[in-house]
Image 1 (cartoon, rainbow, N blue to C red):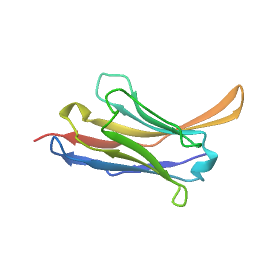
Image 2: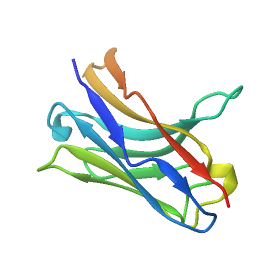
Image 3: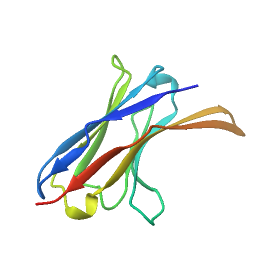
Image 4: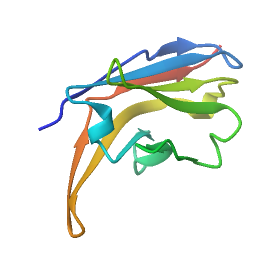
Length: 120
């Protein structure tokens, strides 16, 4: 079982920055992929950024050039640095952990979410 605890959400003006944190209860080196997703009411949860434990990252088109996912192995924490925020970035942001136990079996975990509101 893996617990994920997000923090860092809040209210920010357009053009501002926020850094989200996701603290894992296990070593993030043991997690194959960690990522950030977001969701707004009435819409499906969408991927924002992913990071494999070998460091490879992937971003949604809307996040490229503005958001950066990174990890601190010593703190077992993954971050999402969000710059140049726009009102359309307003959403609940969720941390995700994916662990592959075998070629055909995996476990997936979610945090409780943190709210980000971009508004003047």
